[in-house]
Length: 341
Image (cartoon, rainbow, N blue to C red):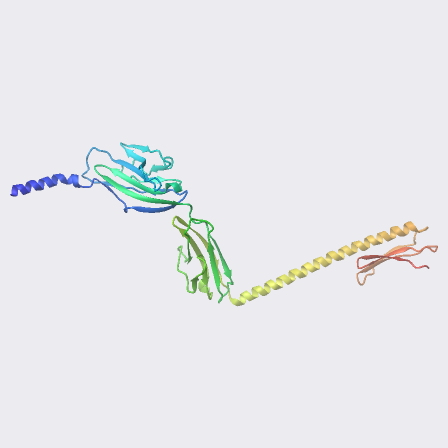
């Protein structure tokens, strides 16, 4: 009886190497990845060979793509056997490669570049020795990650007031998720201070009763399944009195600007009037000298203009001829007749 038990124990010990798993993939079970179009991804498949597996047979590796649109047959797009890498006929052969130069050194991970929506599917890593170990990665390629959002504020940045922080992204595969945070010194995120509420729109944040504690930099993070984008906004609420001073100063500055503009216009008009009067004086001399038998004794331009009036006076010579005089009054030229002597 004892001899029979010893024989059974020896038989079991002899079978143990065959019962042990020869290949084991170090993974977290089935993985699910959401990726953006154009991204690059590493599909991990590190494996371990058991010490008991000392056979001459080499390691064989296969990567298989199972597309939801084409469930069969299996598409082996990359394989390794006897120290040779083989590429299958698929749309991946120009965009896929093993991470390690020799995947037989216990790492069958691959990298896929420039992902396309057609790459969506289930990817299986099969490592063969005496047994076969399988690891699956489910890849979903979406159109794009969120576009860079815009951040702005609406409301008065004064103590005791209310302000609405707004954030919006114009691109990205839905659904998009918005989250605001107040940045703390020394790291990238922090809690929102008291008095903040979620607004009506997904990217709105309402801050009531502004205080000095609300001053700082706020960050909006827009996220979907394939990535995220951020924008930042700085808040500096000021005292209510200072806000009133800013308004009064703006009004006074506007009035001063209007006054300077009025003076400039007045100066241009006065200059134009002077030029017109000078031209009228020249016309008076020309007309008087050309129509009288003997030229006027004088054609004087009197600059006496207490009310902005300049005038010309033609003096008579011998004879009864009457000369024409031109009167320039506030820029208007009037022709009058010189009275007889």
